[in-house]
Image 1: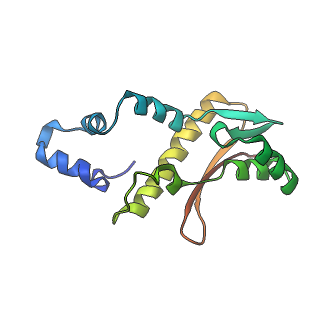
Image 2 (image 1 turned 180 degrees about the vertical axis):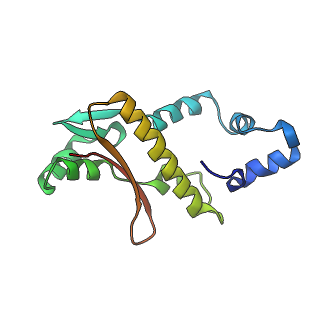
Length: 149
């Protein structure tokens, strides 16, 4: 998924504890059970099916949905816009940019794409769900979800 050296703090702890420090140790140091359960929802998000549109539950707002229905040409466009999210915004409160920041955002997008795709295929096998990660021309990284028709 990514090189261990991408996370400098992990690398430092690993060097200080040679053969006895693992990613499980790192996660245990940095997080608690509530956060772990929150990440279960993050990697396997709930969805809302609204008028046969596949919308991430955490992105769904009825007024926004109605506005995009008026603005967009079809259901796929509505889904793309409703589910669109800038990857950097997921952790902007506690993240400090470092020399690997852009690479970390890219890796996060790839990991979310992987887990969301698996999750949706398992839970919604009858739907052709696409998880798309892309960069805009300004350098921001985005993720969105939609049904391929």
